[in-house]
Length: 198
Image 1 (tube, rainbow, N blue to C red):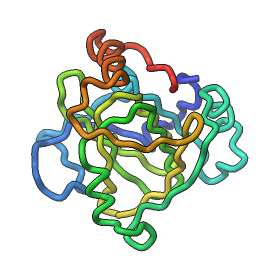
Image 2: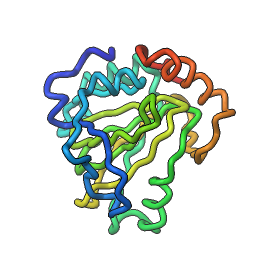
Image 3: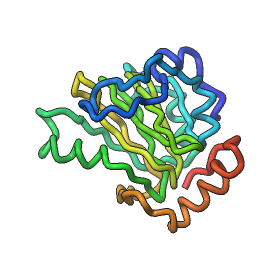
Image 4: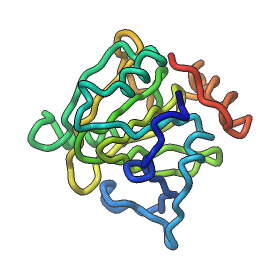
């Protein structure tokens, strides 16, 4: 399943190493010179990604196949923007706190765009830009954070196996079983396999 629906993925998902600037989190934060990384590097970190048809997601057979294969029974859609999200600034600040979840974080961008920041094996930040049509799965136990870009808007589908649990565990939470499993499968082994859906 991870190797399907890959055509044109680089047009809706790209990644680069981040600088250390404290400027507005919504800026791209490229290093100088820019250090783009291939999407295969994300796969090494256990991240799954696809390009899907966001204009017809209700009827998209590829989305249905992914949901069935990975057991994503729960789905909702959320708009993240100042006009539609209550307590927008506070929520965006919370999303940007480095954290992990004990389950996968699955997001499918239906409109707009945003940044998922993840840690590589050497604990360096990688910024993953996701645009309309991009779907990304962050494995359980991976430290990450999210922010909008300077357009301040994303409409995202959230998927989950079973009833959703959105609990963030801010770093450090290395004692959690999900983190230990992620470190063992991905970090300690050089990252060559996707973590099973939970």
